[in-house]
Length: 315
Image (cartoon, rainbow, N blue to C red; front, side, top):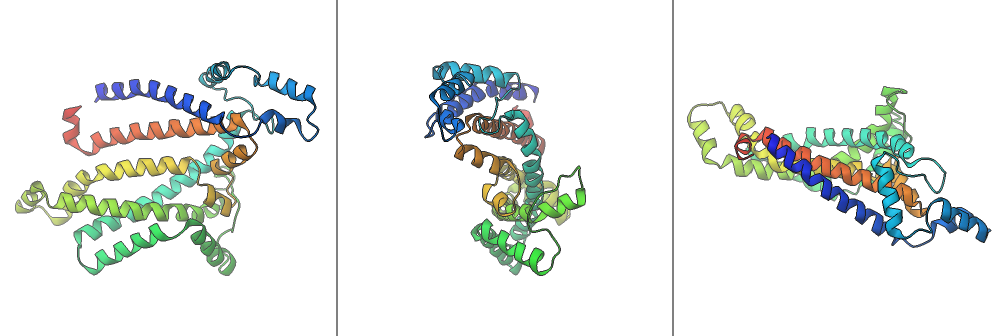
């Protein structure tokens, strides 16, 4: 397992290098000139020239890339062209918000999707199976913006149980923080739960038809032990992959949901940065997001080995 981990870590270096080149190169294709945006309406040529020199926009693109990579390796993502704040500070401010929202959403999805998938597979062809599939179809088909508006109308306007918008940090007031994020977390988790249910059901149906499951039942092992200990453990591999990818998607910023509930997370940060031609912020956020995806894939691979003993021998 240590050899497998060492090989995967060695693959991260060229992958991250390629990702950084792609991020920096594609960023240059965005229309507009950040120097003109920062110069304001007057656009004094002297001011524009000073801005280009200060932020090295007058240097060749390969030189700009080298300066950027050097800063990233030392933990410096540059300075926002719009509000003059360090990009690292902006990321540190917004990331915990999206991290909390994404964590709550993935927990909701796991608590709903996996049990529903297990019940649907075990009770195949029954009313439980049809109900689980109906829930899956509803979850996949329901637009997030519509569900968010309906939840606000019901729980905020009609019942007055939860705040309609805004965000309170966990450090400030954990009760208010959960109250302000539970609805957007459910909106995000609802769709993921539906997808997890379908994958869990398909994997469980395949595993339940395996020879070792029939052997376990023939030995007199209880049905609950057969399902939870033998079948579910071997059916988790595709679910782990999906869960890691969906968590990465959530961490990259659920733009629409954050906008509906006025959550100041990664989604709003990157949208504002793109509209303002704030190159440094876009590059920093996308790099953090890509690194998160790669790290989650590594964690998913390690989880495979822990969940399936047969994979340990091959590594």
